[in-house]
Length: 161
Image (cartoon, rainbow, N blue to C red; front, top):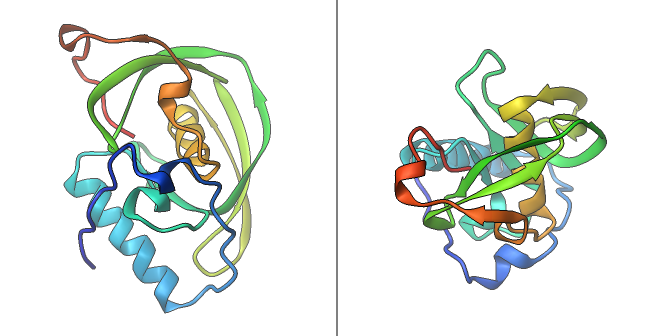
């Protein structure tokens, strides 16, 4: 396992639609393990493959709750409901935070590292983090959804996704 370099905005790969994963092998497992180590090293709660320079539909989320680490390969949002507005940051935009409105509930379908399909329902902060990472796989940056940028004194306890 290794820590990879985080790609910073305005790198082109951050705004590209990622290609689906087709091979579920040890190379994919290594990417997922590296992504986890990279996310933890950078104090993030999520990381998408384009953020480490890979054009692949792979993302992980770990918000430090009972859900543990969620690995999402070729994820699709199946359903959303409700609304929440809250602060977001991004490892590819150091020291930039803004208020973003997203659905409060999300249901996704994705594959795990062995290619097995699963579905997952999430709400609140976990739903926010999942949607943020799936946006990355579609080349959508949180900055396109910010309604208001936050000043440093408004940032207590905000984590980067």
